[in-house]
Length: 589
Ligand SMILES: [Ca+2]
Ligand SMILES: [Ca+2]
Image 1: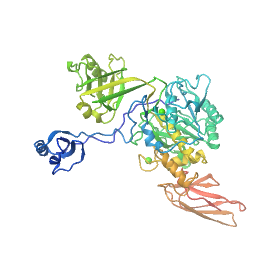
Image 2: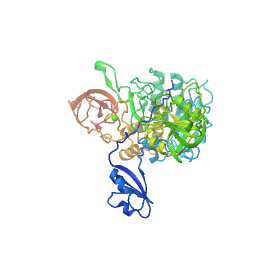
Image 3: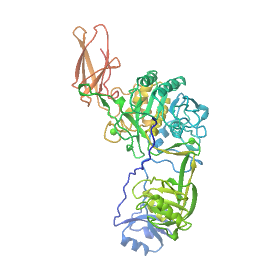
Image 4: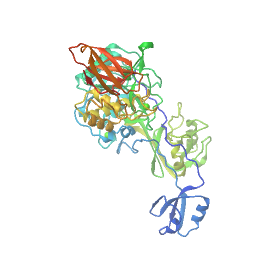
């Protein structure tokens, strides 16, 4: 029942550049260098050097000038992604995962009053990066103590919501927010619908206002659905993962209307290839109905998400070249090595030149394992395998593994830098922090963002927070709302600003970027008919709400008439079909 995690390659936003005739060069000089700069556009300069574009003639001329010292190519440095994790060692400093920046969680401060209930595999007490005094829990019978992990999944999820802001490790979307942990999985990795219905009650009993579920499976269940309906009817918010099968199947509990379905995006604002995308329509023929609450509503970062693990259960790598940190991924073999670099090409055979050195190896032709084995059998101390396409290289050496030297993957974007370095180091070790991918990782990100936003707008209901997250999400993928992203990527600051500007009830007439819809009306036939006229709305049909409840769906032709009791008044509004955000004003007749 628990969604399994997947590794995917981090996509990069830049393709490789092509070499024009002129090349950007760094020229270092004696004296003040003014004689060398004459006649050139200096692009950037520092103490004893400057960068200019030079063709071959220009390079020759430069070399011949008085005061010239040296010249080298000004190598391009590409960001790996639009958003990046902080680089460094989480045992020495606190690293913000990329999704913190992407979802603007670093732009708001958590206020008191929130409690997030996490239904998962427990939160392991061995990880110190939590405010443990704010954390309570329950466990299902048979799953063991909630504070002992049943696999790293629950600990990773909890860290994304609430890891403490304490100068070490990572930081959650809502750092230190009180948690109630309900352990419904053990190492076997699944639970029942009845477990979730029971858990929802336990979340209520604990005083939680948000439930986060990084889990799901096929098949709706009325007892389970009722439990979440009750939770939101009492003002709460429930989020759940869309699922990791990369298809259009609707998973539950995410597929219930009361539960907000969460998809996963990567650090480049692309949808994760595993993120499920069920349709927002259900039924057939004349009964076809569009409902935005049964499909993905928003997304958050969930590809290669960096978070907490039970102590020592993660494997983390680090690498440097000429003393500078280089992004890496752990492939295999715990240990550390450093030394001079030795480039082995694709390392298809042993090479005595690698003895005592760090092998730099291109991906391709033979297996990762055999490359590392050829490095080790040449006397190499450690291996860095460099991707042959944009992005980080993730991989393992497979089983059986006859090698023992630490081997890490590196991104293609760092190839030039690595091959130009004279020394390098690699290290792989057990860690309290590591990576997972899945809609399971995006879901707690949204739960944490919701807590953060809600804490700054404490008078709002869960439904209003849900609407604000959607109205303020950043559109991504296909233009406008789509089945993969829903309304888009959640943005904490934008959601808070939206609520500040519009109040809890939001911009009923028009959210940012929305469609103008206005409603007017009158009574006739001795008050027995209510005649509505509206403008706007881009859907073929519209939903008509009477006294806050969906009454019916009708053709978007700008008018409709209702038979009403002559002695009562009614409040009407009209929304785009399936939307609770793209709506007219309310009128009372
Ligand atoms: Ca921390
Ligand atoms: Ca979109």
